[in-house]
Image 1 (cartoon, rainbow, N blue to C red):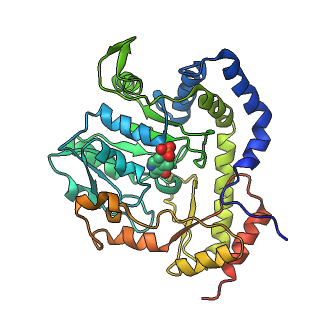
Image 2: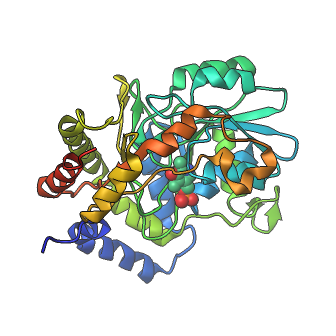
Length: 367
Ligand SMILES: *Cc1c(COP(=O)(O)O)cnc(C)c1O
């Protein structure tokens, strides 16, 4: 009987780093500095270097990173924020939570990222931000997005939750927009042992505001300049992340190697991920496309190969966004992608033997 395969194997990485991580956590426990301990500032500095920007502001999740970034721009009722309908719900959810309106623009058929040519027609006087998502670990077409944003004077927030370490024309994710948001959810490319996130920015004034907003809008002890939130990053999580960050480049390279191997083996059977020549794709997900998705997915599951679908329903068709008034057919490219995508098992410690099982299983489906 073959070993059960995991979609991602968090234990494999934990086993490798266990001693170092335990030691880092013990230090936090011994110090009892659970809130804003030195590891938080340490990680913020290391992350800003890693992303090629100036400031990092640790927060309690990727969702809070987006939420607080929008708060810092003063976004609220009456405002509009343009984003992709083909993403995780958090990207647009935070816009609605602030009382503003998410406005969707369809995606590019090849990269599945927001299509810059579809953004301009959505811009109104109410547009206060654009949030491109670097889906699966590949940057959106930032030159075109930034050119349009600059022309209209609209700040760009990169949703880089899946794209830590990815590059667009040599620039790192989170170094291009006004702010960039990261998630340290365990399944992301740099994951902690619970929830965590970070906002990156080169703007020093904004960085101060973000630090205050995540901490009840506090500028001095018990003096509150803004209505803020309790959105800090735990010291324990920062300590875990500082250990893992040391091995991140190696892990990203392993993902790229595995992805290239998948693509070489599968390119004649399914549509393998399209990577723009100038992009470093970091494959948080290795996501293929096929019109026979449901059949292939079932075939894989029947043969013990776990599959995930990112995402089966675009956001404009979600019940939670019904009040926005969208309908089926509004974003045909996103709707088609939602029917065709499926993500294959992918984690840096995956062996070639494990990968061969996935490849063989996919090739064995007679359609
Ligand atoms: C994971 C994710 C988020 C949210 O991050 P959390 O840390 O889970 O709150 C936001 N956007 C995208 C694209 C994501 O993949």
